[in-house]
Length: 113
Image (cartoon, rainbow, N blue to C red):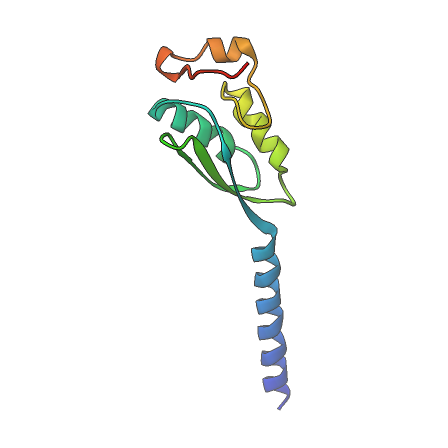
């Protein structure tokens, strides 16, 4: 009887642990300006290089990136800043002009004023 209760308790604790972990992961989608496959690689690498980001997928047709991340380890604002740091404007952050100007010609997207 004690073994059954112990097994049940351990099982419930494992289920609760997985539920808590699953709740911490968040998925967000936002616009990132770019043009080509090099942009895609640069954007995704900048984002997945952050601790807490588990997935980044940028679509060059829609200019949208989908990101899965742990809010306890990284904030959405930090993700926007990481993208801007490599030369790509987002909805919230603008890349520095000198970083944007250093991008390859095919990567230079039309910037909003």
